[in-house]
Amino acid sequence: MFEQRILSYGIRGVTLVAVVLGGLFLARPTGGQGPDNDPGVQLGPRPFYLVDDMDDSELKTALQQCVEGPFYRTSFSIGHRGAALMFPEHTRESYIAAARMGAGIVECDVTFTADRELVCRHSQCDLHTTTNILAIPDLAAKCTQPFTPAVLDPETGEVMEPASAMCCTSDITLEEFLSLTGKMDASDRAAQTVEEYLGGTANWRTDLYAANSGTLMTHADSIALFQELGVKMTPELKTPNVEMPFEGDYTQEAFAQQMIDEYKAAGVPPANVYAQSFLLDDVLYWIANEPEFGAQAVYLDPRSLGENFDSNNPSTFSPTMQELVDQGVQIIAPPMQFLVTLDDTGAIVPSAYALAAKEAGLDIITWTLERSGPLTNGGGSYYQTVTSVINNSGDMYNVLDVLAQDVGILGIFSDWPATVTYYANCMEIE
Image (cartoon, rainbow, N blue to C red; front, top):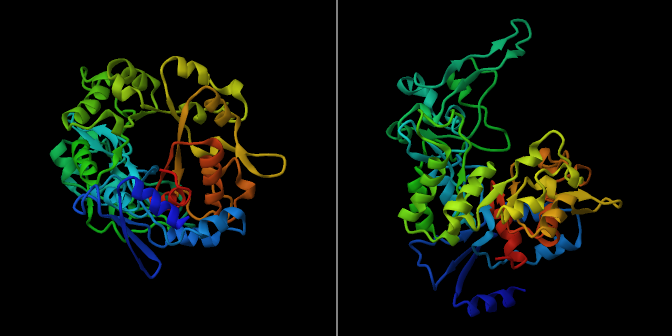
């Protein structure tokens, strides 16, 4: 398999130079993109750890054959907020880490500031948990909701009311936004002080890469960086937390158009952009008004988040898959748990949702791998439909294999893209 993939690269006019250093495989193309804008693909130890952690199976044996690579960038591997497992999300450092781990597509979630400039944040109102804004008094004073300490039971110390705050990009200007530093997305619900509140990082994540190094990005800056890194782009137009039209005249349509305009201004080919939204109206707007971008716009399916939704009962899919296709939607993106289920033997198989989407002709992208921590106790919400067969972290590769081979997804978002890159490279998925 190793020699076949090297030959395959030769056909594409790319030669690989590779060095194995204590289990860390470094691969760099010597043709095509130069070293200045392609830092090479470095997977680190985690994918190898996960393969070793798998129960014995044909899949494990197949993945073990790929430990020497070659490892290369693939559009199947999508950097979710960059590499948010260990780097502060939506920061320059997180984006670069994702590209270095082979993500062929990287995400900037797009929202806006008080002066209507576009910036990369997962939510319009998450600055209190993803940045140091509360530690800067002049900016903290502008937050929608100031910091309020937790109310604790005086005898037991139990949290009676959690600490809280709400700081939004729309509370501050672009200049003020760029003065902030990104941190791991977390807070301490028992906090009595701002300093305590800014902690709370999960014990399976880390603050190692967060110390004064989370460089925040404008949307335009992310485009320039992604062009430099040679990756495709998947911006998500975030549903605003503020009432729209913002300040009476900034409409949702203007917001959706402004995002696309920044790609056009940068000369990015529409084929390199996968615009996303949970709002069907946004996707339909792009289809109608920016058809080149709308052709591969991604509908983040909110139907799967409804109380009555059942991924194995098509009668709960409203609108139907065919109705979405009839409106021009070509790519749908549900969370990964709704694409898989268990058959009568306990094997992981495609869900009715997955089968219905494919039957209607929809392509599928899904989310999110590496967002659940250790999988020793069933894996949590992203594995809720197959939880009885999830008992170690290596099991994520069993789920990924079904998503790739049986469901036929185009790609998957991951908080640690190296995990997906390893699988995709091993299975020769580009």
